[in-house]
Amino acid sequence: MKIIDFFTAKPARFFLLAAVLWLGLMCFFNSKDIGENGFSWHDILVEANGMFFDLLVFGILLSVYEALREKKEKIERLHEEIDDYRGWDEKEAMFRIVGAVRRLNKLQVSNILLYRCSLRKAHLQYTDLRGAYLVMSDLRGASFEFTDLRGANFQHADLRGANFRGANIQGADMSWANLRGAVFAFALHNHRVTESKTHLFDRISTNLQGVNLHGAQVFKNWFEKIEEWEVIGFEEIKEKYQIDEKGILRLK
Image (cartoon, rainbow, N blue to C red; front, side, top):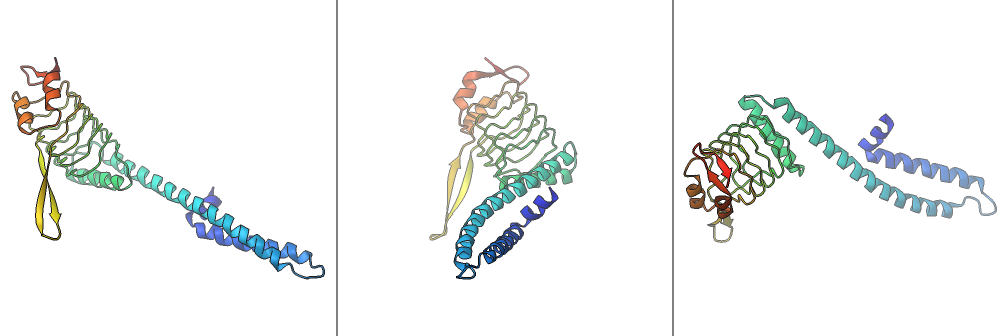
């Protein structure tokens, strides 16, 4: 394995070594066949041409393998970093976890295991957390503005005061989560037009279609608030759930 790692770490080493060995062998075997015409350089060049094509194809495959391996190792290290700070109720731990989340996003990873993490007032806006696992996490006052949270699991999470303006929460599971004070209002997304220096705004509503809200804790006037906020899926929620005397959403 050490030999393989040596060459795959620097594919150029392998290509150079293979080319030198192959040419050396071709020269050696062709030198045995001197005959009337002497050295058969034509055969050497033909073989070398085929060899370099084979090496090119193999080099591309090896480079892809190396890139995928490095990406996998980075992802594993970032997940380990999150595990190291899981359960820590410190600002430094929160910053470390948020940083790991953003770096995982750059590696096209969204379904991150963030259960039992302390992320109070964390800035997670504009992140991709599709399919993320946030069960029993402390997310009080966290910002999820314009965040993609489709299919995320927030079961039993503390979301009091969390900001979901313009977020896409379609298909997420928020059962038994504490949503008191959480904001699901629409947001204005700023676009700048370069030529006229004019600022235009897109009105983006929070998407709660298909969200599991059974057992979630809300205020008594929550239905009125999400209607006022123009939440996508409001009619579906009001038709499906009712708020009991304790402010808990129950299926009708």
